[in-house]
Image 1: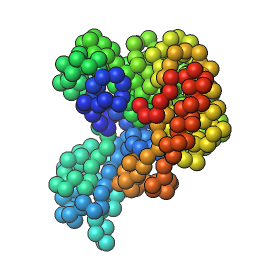
Image 2: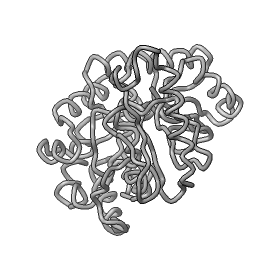
Image 3: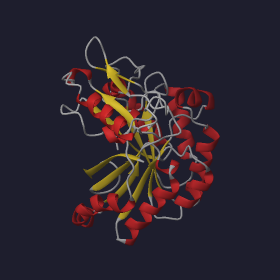
Image 4: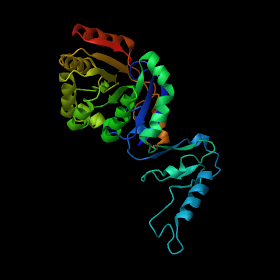
Length: 315
């Protein structure tokens, strides 16, 4: 289950890369810029302002339901019900308690209604990845597995990475490491560039804001460091969560204690994904316009450098 394939990316590993975004994540970070990545099921994205009130989606669904019905059983008798209905105030109402049906992915003429998430095969994905092979070869780029959480679908993710390696395509992975050690150990057998999150080191704060288990994440980080992984740690700097001096010093102290040549990227908070929450029928809990001051970020860089870390803003 994936929700996007992005070609010609330059911020998800070395060189020019194609990024495959896996759908589904064990975490629910409050600031997540891709909230459509959290559920493991397809979801509706709906932009009311783009809706033409043409009811094409409702007509299409009714036809599909009727086509599935038999002479003896109506859809409702079989436990089926429409996902969409008309809103008397204009637009549509969506039943978000059930996975969105993939059959409604491409019916909206205005793209007001879309389905985030689809099943894809390794060959289908690799057909996209191969299109830019010459750019990978020239730039040192390749394939990046991202998400969501790619290691939440370990069999498929590692089979895809192995296929890329067999075609001499470099591989990278972006992961929260909030997965079982067994999945990390399996992935560590492949020559990934690892881009891992380190959001906070206080277990209570981390759990409350993201749902992550800090001992699990920390143990996986230590495992990768002990086994010489090509490791970059990314720290999202989030207002009210970890942008204070005490939190950041503890995070950077932990990173420095891994005793491995690694790089740390501080990722400044932004709200570019806020509009997606409304499209998913969710609430974005941050006030729009929040920013972390550049001067404060620079102070954290200087502290990290004093610990011997290679550290920068962005990544």
